[in-house]
Length: 182
Image 1 (cartoon, one colour):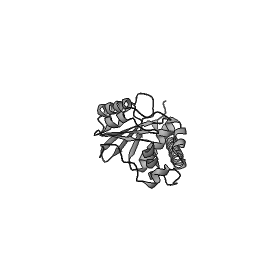
Image 2 (image 1 turned 180 degrees about the horizontal axis):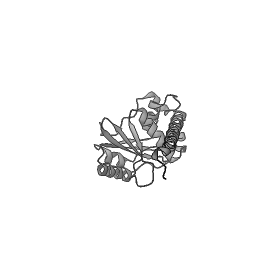
Image 3 (image 1 turned 180 degrees about the vertical axis):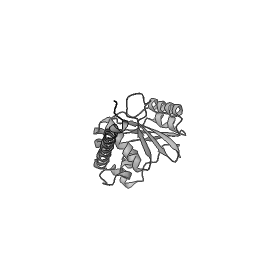
Image 4 (image 1 turned 60 degrees about the horizontal axis):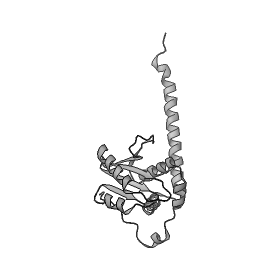
């Protein structure tokens, strides 16, 4: 005679509790990682997935609901999906060390934005953007977050205050957002 479904209830409960515990531990680890960042160099040293996790945590602290695409290559270049006030914003993360992000990456993100029907997009980089990339994003719902803006983003959500802003940035106002996003 087959076992009734109720016999599997304790196993199902154990599975869900274990999953919730692992998720909570991952959230704590990511929060600690964000708090421990001290510079652009420390951000660049993170593995690409941890960099994406860190940005997800930063945007959560800004009040966004964050969905991680979990990589896999079929994400169309989208690493995070942000939701707030009924608006959807796609985020692409570029943890690069040297070359500026070019217009090709911005154009591709713009195509994905339209394909997915999102309201806006953010391209977050640990470098700068080429003049062509900045010009292309102008008057489009794309926010280009360069290395300096990224440091300000982390500084704004970090409670430890460990992230170091560039010395010149401490004297003048934060960088102006390069975006048409409201």
